[in-house]
Length: 449
Image 1 (cartoon, rainbow, N blue to C red):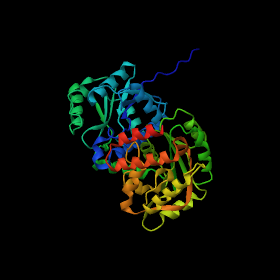
Image 2: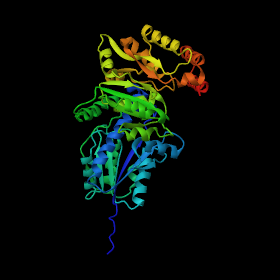
Image 3: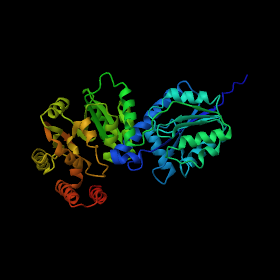
Image 4: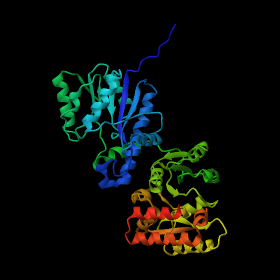
């Protein structure tokens, strides 16, 4: 007897985009800034997919992620989506044109593939949970159209059991007329309509409480870590394992954020049970992404080639407990005996203590609430640490913990102590003189490549 697998008759299509600053959640940029708006897009998409994963435990349909590209290369965009959300999903590009054209093409392709009930959602509605998705598919068994009304006059979900192009043409998209126009078309064509309950899309600053309510309802970990250590990486396979092992005895959260390594960095970190995120390259982007998912009350940003002192956790909490302190860092010790390294360490100590201006290789740390309040790292290709400290200085003291981190001397050894120091000072001077940061970054990488 031949046993045939049951055919898949239902499909959930999710519309989203890669969270690139400046392109994601653009209507929230004036209120949040480009980086924070993109991080919100990242969080809300991941939240939606967690609900889809819950739905899939009791549902046998297929899932398709329709993504809007951030570049002109389809395969690059697809890889970015896979690196971000995992390879378990079916990724397809959105069509060109307005929202109607994109919805229409996705629906038509699903029905052409033999799907009988198709539900399409976005990732802007935090109240859309697995139960409502399942309800939509159940209603499609007895109704032609299912709509999830949004409080702004649109809809957060549309389900159909046949392709009807009229639903996607001559609609005033992004207005409060979308839902009534869609309902009017359904009635005119004689289709039966079922409605889910009304929910709020998060598109504007006044919508943010809807997202905050979902976050508040999510139970925090039973014993949240006090410190989250965020480690940006790019081809750090030679140092990542020793670094992570050195942190094993501390009760901290360890988050590795990789910017596209071509070596074994990600595999080595994952093998140690570490949370590993993948983003586009850029230390600021990577550290912001890590901060976005961190559970700790305190964030500590650590370069992969830097080692913390054994008692770092208590030193961090004691330093931030000092009156008027807004952030902190450690003194710097550089590996190696090359002539001039001790002078570099002395210069760093003078700059850090005297000017309250530590750099990223000194393991910057601050409270998570403070980091988010100032908007995190600016999306700069270089000097993101310098710029963050400058923004923090008006809010309080930048304190230096009474111990040193040990950092690799590879930069100084490769180029030379004197030349590396001179390059660093020229970079700062160019920044203050208003030289475009992209030009500074190209020059810096060219000199130290």
